[in-house]
Length: 199
Image 1: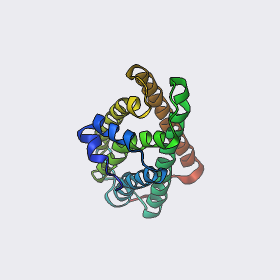
Image 2: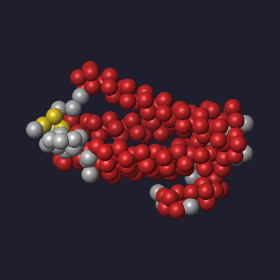
Image 3: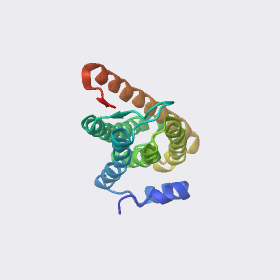
């Protein structure tokens, strides 16, 4: 069943990582997990920007047109899925440095399940107040980093001391990936692909 590891990752993450490591799923299973979970921030973000409006401070909520919101939601969905796959590739590529030889499916499982809290927190967009979404995002990021540090030694079959350095490298790559996605978004906006605001 898709998403069947979710509860375990929140309730008892180390045990759940052991379960995932013992019972590797197929590439299609990991792909379906990403495709389903990435819908949460996409749909919630679309609804918040087109129908509720974002509250950034004092004043009226800021909304964008439904057409702009749809285009941004599609772009966001594609970026999230591509981002997880890129992170999985980087995890596999860096593994050689730490004497590990994971398959791409193992790397994708690690990337997908580690990113899950950050994707699921997208539901906070249904209360589109900037400080609230920022705090929720910070909490989700912290838990994703914890999942990564606890999952790397188990999924990559390496000692914990090497796992710490490996995890730190993955976090760094993840941050670089995030900054790159933000830079691409900024460039797209300056090229005329920005949103159309509505009163």
